[in-house]
Length: 149
Image 1 (cartoon, rainbow, N blue to C red):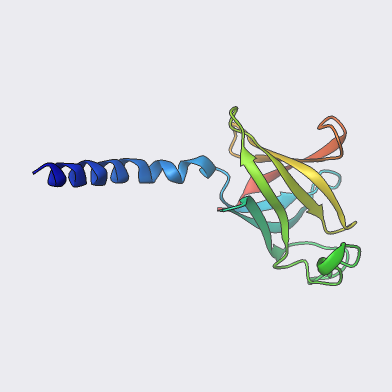
Image 2 (image 1 turned 60 degrees about the horizontal axis):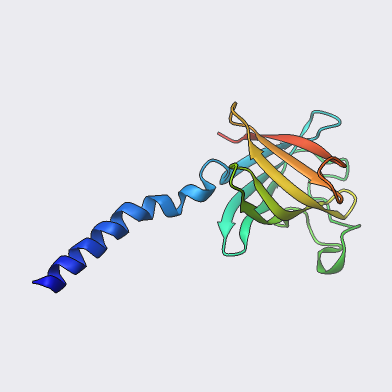
């Protein structure tokens, strides 16, 4: 009898905790329209998903590029050099902070090939504040990405 109760309790715990497992990334996972902070123009669509290494963002569509509809990452370091931006992972390794923001990861700017430290924060209006910086968060730029509906 005890083993039946143990199994029932374990199953109940599993059913109750499963929804919470995905809650850690709730709100930031999904497709986002990137908005250039200088021009205000929509540039691409990035799909953000949770991986074992933290949040990861992959470019799934180019909306506007001065280098044509399928630009290559000419200035990117390493194996990314010369690769198409579409399909490229440009955001990786972010972990959720106690305040609900995400940090500790990196973001690649495919235009200049530079990799920056990254922070994400879901705003009250449902948009995503994406900050890339060198050293301290004060030394950087923030883009506000819009959810793709």
